[in-house]
Amino acid sequence: MLTDAQCRNATCPPERKQARFTDSGGLYLQVSPNGSKRWFYKYRTEGKEKQLALGSYPAVSLTAARKARDAAKIQRSEGSDPIQTRKLKKLKGGGETGESFKAVALEWYGKQADKWSPGHAERMLRQFERDLFPWLGDRPMAAVEPMELLSVLQKVEARGAMETADRALMLARQVWRYWLPTASNTQRDITEGLKSRLTPYRGKNFPAIVEPGRFGELLRAMHAYKGGPLVRTALLLAPLLYQRPGNLRMMEWSELDLEAGLWTIPSAKMKRSKQEKENGEAHVVPLPTQAVTLLRDLQVVSGRGRYVFPGQRDHERPMSDNSVRTALYSLGFGEEQSWHGFRASARTMLVDQLDLDHLAIEANLAHAVKDANGRSYNRTKYLAKRLEQMQQWADYLDKLRLGNVVHMHQRAG
Image (cartoon, rainbow, N blue to C red; front, top):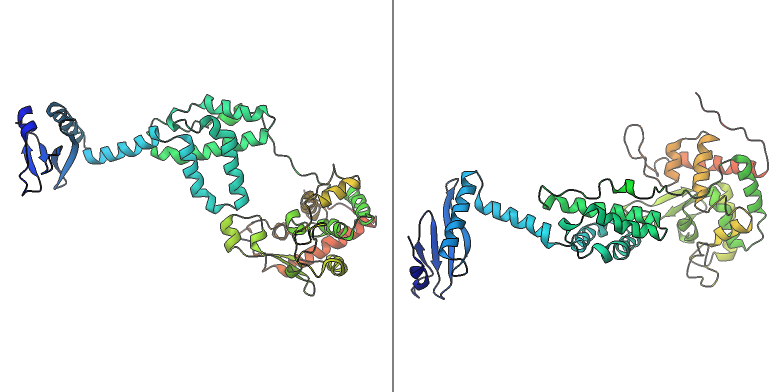
């Protein structure tokens, strides 16, 4: 067995790479020609020799090295490999005490951002920076208590942003679920149950008229609109095509085939993830004859430019998203019907009044749906059926506008 004096005086001849000075029970001091001295515990597991580093001498004394060796022996007697146990402890320890909420959140965000659209990624990062990082950013993940997070969320609520507080909780939940696999078994998801402590929030639907008689009144008002031809045409196409406002106002002449009655919206313009935008198929919208007529009439106004609905001041940009909304308010329907709400109006009346195929309706809405057999509904394959449906819808709107009596479809009980 070694003594302290032997450890202090141990040297390695310059012609050797290292020299070992054995103590007992597998413990030895390894000395290098440059004078560095390190403790190791040698043991065998599954027929292989391993060396567990125990620290440098004299920072780790002979007595401390023996205690570390004895602790490793106990781990082996319990069926654990000391080296693997140390690696696991280091991994857990780093994730538990060394990483702040901000560090973990940004790591999670970095893995998600490429899957999101640039706009969505920017909104998520902005919410972290505004609502969570100022209070939790520097806090170690393992140290954050549920009531501490709740207090942060309630600060968001205090400014009247109930929906924002709900989204902030969702973000925090994702961060905790990302971190937990690297934490110790004593850690838990502190976001559990916090939603019940927040002010109940129910997402607001876009205002939409779904009663046929009232919708007919809206259509008559829209056809009597005295504004410019660009806004008037966009206003009239909104219920006919029931596409997202952003897609309609950014419609380009190059996307239209008026002879075939088709509008092809590039995948990059659709409401999709970044990967889906880059690799997804275009969304094809069948155009009923009423829509084709409106667009042909508008060609004499904007047909030489890029956009079907160019901006009033800058023709290289599409019209403002406030244009149709403002027109609806000027007609006295702004509180009842939003531009986006035309999608809900169409979705409801296509089913309740015309009893049309809901899968085709969802395909026209650009919603991802599956049929009864679990197959994704192909929006292009059923184009002829969808065109027939769009024409039925356009003809139905004409009847509503002209005040014809429309009987509600009665569902079978």
